[in-house]
Length: 164
Image (cartoon, rainbow, N blue to C red; front, side, top):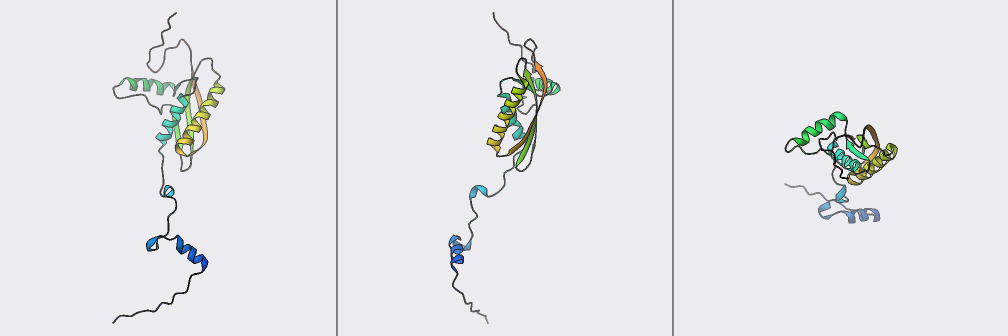
């Protein structure tokens, strides 16, 4: 014995009909823009690499990192497969929509530290925001040293020989 129910269906209002017109086949409601489905997370190291490369592009920045990290990095660079670290001297704190950065830099002797810091901030913010979509709330820069013209490089490279 089966029961059958008689359902009376009223005609939909104009608003309901419009909503039904937006549904997909089989009664599914569209989910919106495919690009907005899901979540994207960006690791701290990714932001650190982007910021490190952007900071090194600024004229007047000789090196990145504190004295100890540059010395340790020079040893690591000499080990086969060690390679240069793009994140040396950069620390990032990444949230869901914002990031904050701390940079340790060494500047060339004779450049304006204020101008170099301004240029580094600008370059880093533009690069990080463009590539990640994160809002950069602050870029703190610590100038730990000045590279003098006659100093040997701390990173293990031979000083440039000038022919006169």
